Length: 106
Image (cartoon, rainbow, N blue to C red; front, top):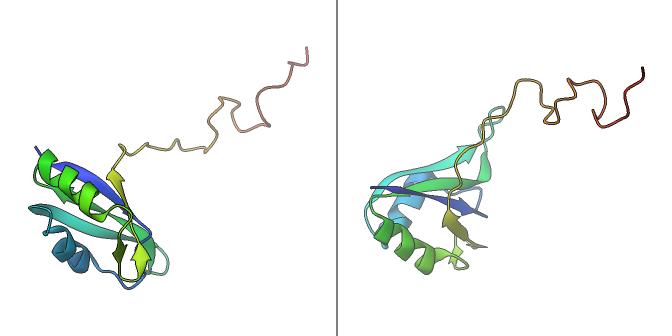
């Protein structure tokens, strides 16, 4: 079972291929991607590496978290599941009309 890792504080020059090569030191890498800005195509300074095994993921966290890569100190930890955002952007059920926490006006 593979395990996805979040890799933060990447140098803006880091590519997915650089990331893949670096993380193979810890184990088999399934995928390695650097997240890019939708508009500019420029790196956003973080990415994800999917390790083939939980053991490889644990080794990668141990080896690379807090260590330098590309002139920057990496943050490496288990990726949290992506939270889908609602279409309206408001989370408090206020329907987009103010904070939704005021007393009703009857």
